[in-house]
Image 1 (cartoon, rainbow, N blue to C red):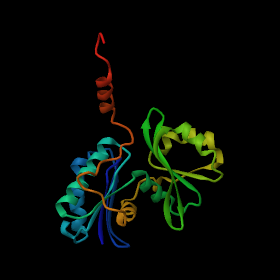
Image 2: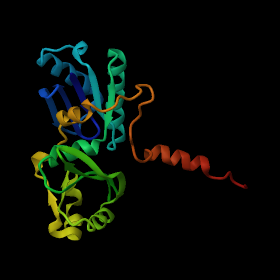
Image 3: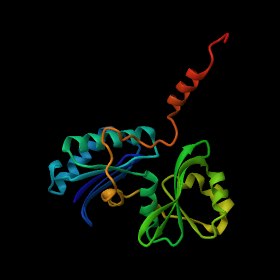
Image 4: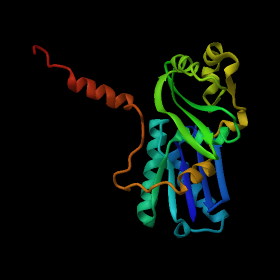
Length: 236
């Protein structure tokens, strides 16, 4: 089965095509550029370089979030459009799971992928490998990195932190966890779209029309709008 994977959930733009257990093409950049302008040309180029057409794709897999609201929305919209137009299955995978598997496949311990959420907060979760499969130990969530580090002290095993935003929170984590904290190398920070394809290849397909991003929290503009709608009118 030829699977197209799409990840625009953060600054990293990743596209891959796998054919069963073989990676036949992969494209990754980590740049502050507009994904909406670059994503379709990148897909077209990868297909052409792999001697494929869109009609050869048998499934689409997308990083569903959390991450950048705009980035997640772009990836999900493109994936839904392609899956619907090609009449192929669509599956979503946690963006954090992709980051965890990209760095932690051979790590003997727990893996905590991090994405910065500003104001000292991170999107994160806890994962481990068991018998060759990635297992979610603690579900993806949003919290202060300092609070997350305190929670991880209960685990009597090393924790590998990975993701391009790790340097922003490394000092806080290391201060709390000491030698329990391990940090992935720079070359492991970028989530691999081929790993995304592999994670989603056999995952249950979603309803294309009902499929939505996983933001974990509301976008700031939406949250402020809802807050304003819930405020009582003057004089009430």
